[in-house]
Amino acid sequence: MMNDKILRVGIVGAGFIAHYHARAALEQKNVTLAAVCDLDLDKARQFAEKYKIAQILQSHMELLQKSNCDAVILCLPNALHVPVALDFIDAGKDVFIEKPLGVNAAEGEKLKAAMLEHNRRVMIGHMWRFDAQTRFVHDMITAGKIGKIVKTKGYGIHVDWGPEGWFTQKRLAGGGALADMGVHAIDTVRFLLGDPQPLSVYAVIKTCFGDYDVDDLGVLMIHWDNGAVSLVESGWWHPQSDGPEASTQLVGTKGYARLYPTSAEIPLEKNGGRQITRLAEKEEHCDQAMYSVQMAHFIHCVRNHLTPCPGVEEGLVVQRIVDAAYRSAATGEVQKLNI
View 1 (cartoon, rainbow, N blue to C red):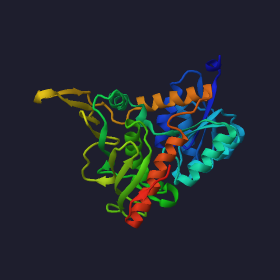
View 2 (cartoon, rainbow, N blue to C red):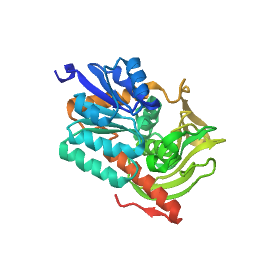
View 3 (cartoon, one colour):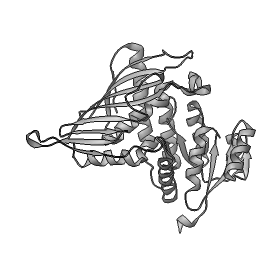
View 4 (cartoon, rainbow, N blue to C red):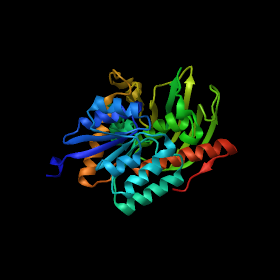
């Protein structure tokens, strides 16, 4: 059977997020981490020792040529996502890309073309889709329990904290907090809404909290083709946020739902109060579980030659929204999207 075959997976980049993906991969049946590469060989060695990875390499081309992997997980600066993914796709490998897809939609289109030409599987790591509480709210909305969603508000903000290194360098990250944190809020609300297409984006994006050439404050308004309007806030180092990463509030014609803390409120007839459902808060907000479910989906798609979701199409929509937001902030005008 196809699932009995040992699937050899390589990891490119041994930074913080790679540990989540490594643990997730090792939880899957008949999956082995065959190789890891990082420009910092000491970091790669430590990573390999922790996860019992036999092959330690320094460049992705070495991994491509020497490891004989079936699929790879890319944990790299955003500017390297697409160029490195293209090398693996051209060589017939399936690819998991840590979010976001890249630094602009134009390079995402190149990725899509290569994926289709070589018939490969490409997944983008928008992991909040795989969280149990996200699925709970999604299922309530899909079942029509809070009616037609008319407006939402979501957050991708680091409170009293912000990243360093390549995250704060535009040439490597493509953007700042919007590209880093805002994409979580954008993809989460899009998933909850049933993956509508964006019609327009208006944004104010600034640098207020640090000395770098990227943004650390963003406020976006997205108009979707299903009639809903979404407000999305992104940021680093903010002293306050109305909710944690990917927290989303949704107002429907029959009620209200919120993700993190997760609840639903449905007004009863004749001013009879509200039917309220609350889920227990997560012990760890950004937990391993959703990464593991996400990786299970990727491995299943690789084994069965299926298109992952979120894949390139979903990643491209987020990237187009981000691109439009930066254009809007630069021009002060609403940006219409033709998707």
